[in-house]
Image (cartoon, rainbow, N blue to C red):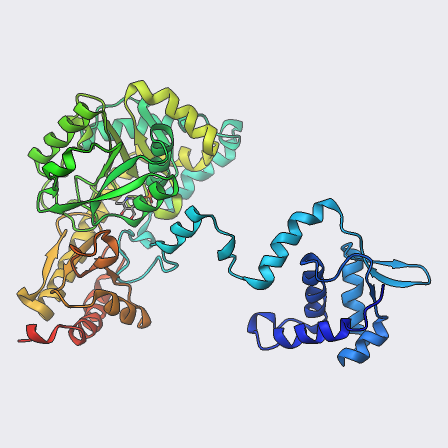
Length: 503
Ligand SMILES: Cc1ncc(COP(=O)(O)O)c(C=O)c1O
């Protein structure tokens, strides 16, 4: 079969591709890709004869070399075949091209691939909270990684690499590298009053994975999980992706505010940040903690205690964990090295009741396969040799100073007209703005000037009760930059200040 309109078909596509910056490739690559995509999309059927390279070059006003290159590449990859004395043809579709053809067709019409997403995938992306910007003033939740003790780290790392042990290079053991599990258990008992031994500690890739694992092993699709409102976007995304419905529960100065009508319908999980509510920063009161534990025990609810940054507490001592108060084994404690060491490490830990320890260790490696043996061995040494404790001590002093500078800058520009919360601990504070102040617009304008100022509104599920404000991380901002960068941000905030509040 021979179609006279093939050059027309190709011309149309070449013209369409031309204004697109992404396709500023050499012409021979463009022609190759256009023919290849058309074959995959089954727009050019198997057996179709192509014009000779000379004819096609003339019709498309391209050089013959361009067409020859495209043909040769397509022949080499099996899309075209030459038949002696007859010419060049579209090769027969083989069965393993069928899956590619579907993808190719969608790619032509929908380059983002969004239409291919499942309902769950589409929902995840619709509500995605993650951003590509992960460093700079005032990125919340990120420590100053530039001050990490690299030399100590590389010495420990080299020590392990020199020995190059098979157990660190192969898949990891169920619950993680045993010496790290032991070091974490020891640390949590001492620093966080967590009741545990090493067998209850699981090394995960962070709190995201800990939530995922707990929800997969203990929850069913259709279950509900109470989450604080506002809360960390990652918690909602992980739960939603498993078909577990996050139910927002408002927080007040004492933390999760449970009303009688909530208590009538026990969920499967309750996710809380009792030591430092994320993102507002309050500490859950003792009476609320007791209520939560009693309720969880009575209704067989699992509490996910997300203890993401309580190592950094300025002034008072860090508070004991909720897990340490639990006598009924309802708490799944989750911690992370993302704030104390560095987020790119992707190592966190989880403490589960003894009765679940073995199932969780097996589940962890069944679902994700263990790994990162070297990194886990280095963290274990870093802890047992005392570097972890001294790094935290050093960073706590530094962050306390950066926090002071940010609070001072806020006071200088706004005095009492704004409310600061969460400034007693962690790596960020929440700057509360008056009603009517559009934190989303401020955040967008700040981003255009290279300043990260996450809008508080985004962390709420219930827009009716959402407060306006900005999350400002100070830990990763050098002292001398805090004042000047906040001054620029203050200028933006003032432009969005509701008229009636001025003066
Ligand atoms: C409340 C809360 N939980 C969990 C995380 C993420 O922890 P990880 O890096 O261990 O996944 C964050 C990150 O900022 C957080 O704020």
